[in-house]
Amino acid sequence: MSRIAIIGAGAWGTALAIVLGRKGTHQVHLWANELEVSESIARNRINKHFLPGFILPESIAATSDLNAVLDGAEIVVSVMPSQHCRGLFERMAPGLRPETLFVSCTKGLEDGTLLRMTEVIGDVLRSRKFTARVAALSGPSFAKEVARGDPTAVTVASIDGEVTRAVQHAFNDSRFRVYTNDDVIGVELGGALKNIIAIAAGVCDGLGLGHNSVAALITRGLAEVARLVVACGGRLDTMAGLAGLGDLVLTCTGDLSRNRSVGVELGKGRKLPDIIAGMHGAVAEGVFTTKAAVGLARKKNVEMPITEQMFAILENGKSPHQAIEDLMTRAAKSEV
Image 1 (cartoon, one colour):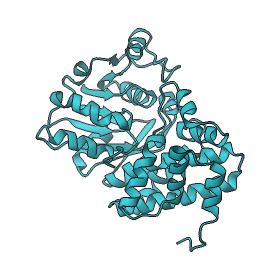
Image 2: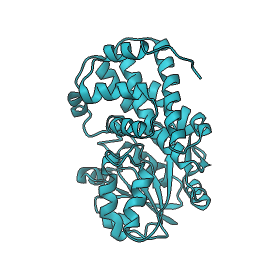
Image 3: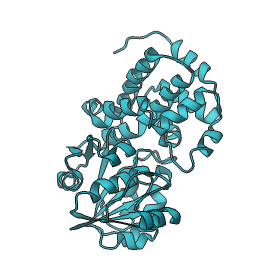
Image 4: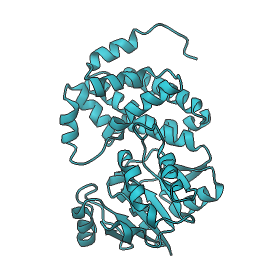
């Protein structure tokens, strides 16, 4: 049996543990930052804090001891919030080995450096004098539906075909279908940037706007995400796939989307700090990614008007009504 370590016991990390644990061919070790989470799983087989209502298979062991989780791990799956990725990998680095496979399931960008998560992992592990064998897993996948066993399709990307095939084999089953891709840039940026557009979609809903507005937002949001992906070296066709259009539509329209939910509350007039305080530890990655996305777009000289307006709302408290007015009254232009 292969030994897999999952770093991060939020809803998504726990759902992935269920996917891997139900196969019966892995020893899954789930690390929780919060002691009460690991104790709840050990005692009741349920993550009551982040994913209540789902029984974890007996093959999953949960702990808050980072060294114990990493001991002998052949695959390390990182599912921590993006702002904690570097710090956690720096803590983990002494116990990591060159032959280990790393799977990043965090959809975000690092503030300041503007790096994608696989780049952060590679940056940290180069200090250990080895090149990380790393892949990014992304696609339309709400944690609750994955945990429930609803048919789900995702994609895993790496420049190393051996890594993608190994990760595909580890995760793939009759309810969780994994496709492979070699466009790491497109897969990661698609997964990170769609969260910003999802907040904007929620704002539309919170303002009481209809389907026309959301359809336009999704379409033009995909266009600006694709522009940045291509400018960064990713492929346009990736944006038509699971990590692009698929994830964008899900996150912009699904009621389980935390990013969309934040936008709904913003549209209703609530202040961002109050919204975040009411999330009880859950993370809406788009809130943290927007600033980095704006920085990356400016660095690449890419126009991203929706992202710019979301930055103004989140960072500067701009009125959502005014943001929409500014978007709609921009100079007329060709769609292509």
